[in-house]
Length: 97
Image (cartoon, rainbow, N blue to C red; front, top):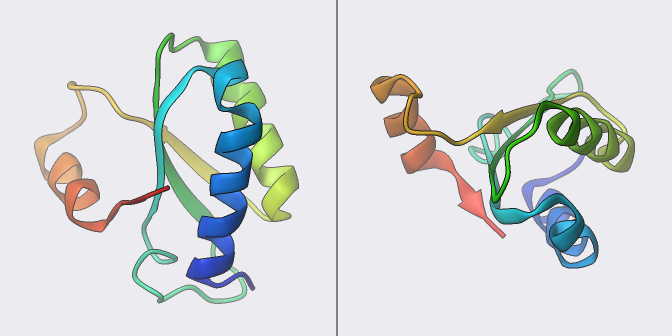
């Protein structure tokens, strides 16, 4: 089970190495890992804002992140159309790298 600090470090390295390839504007962790409430079965919730959101790009990004973290990744693309209650939750919780 990865700690928040380990996740932040790995995600920051990923952004530095692959951020341009994916057009990542912002990327961060939210959910149980961000709250330090994760357990062995937890996935990693990642919020991403992309320059050019394409489905194929999102799929590839999710696969790469899942491989890197060696667990399930729930990748959420930030957009204005997200439910306001969900936007508020991620605004409070997301730890950007």
